[in-house]
Length: 122
Image (cartoon, rainbow, N blue to C red; front, side, top):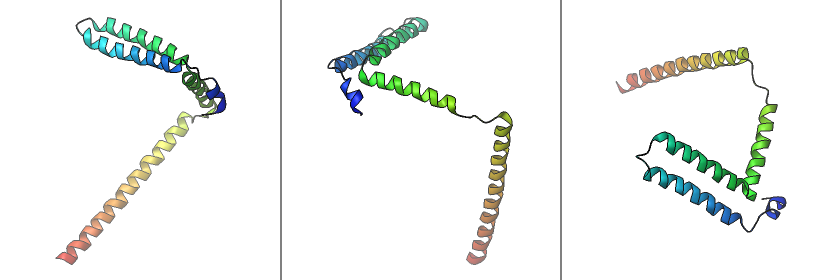
């Protein structure tokens, strides 16, 4: 880890992660305990717990580093030049053609080798 991230570590980070784990465990146990309740209510409570756990996790140094990484990854994805529909179709057709040719070549080799072995064995 770099020095900047280590300098931002708080002595309360482990306590915050403990709260995050407690929220996740409470969600899992609560979902099992209240299994007779309607699914909609359980999902809403789980979503609320996930939001709170995510918010608490983002308050830690590792959570902030993850958020920064996610933002940088999104920026890099926007820089990617995606192929057009025509390029994608052409590439797909080339791949299918090569797979078919290789299948025929392998079938031919298999047949030839099978014939040779049957000639040798008898």
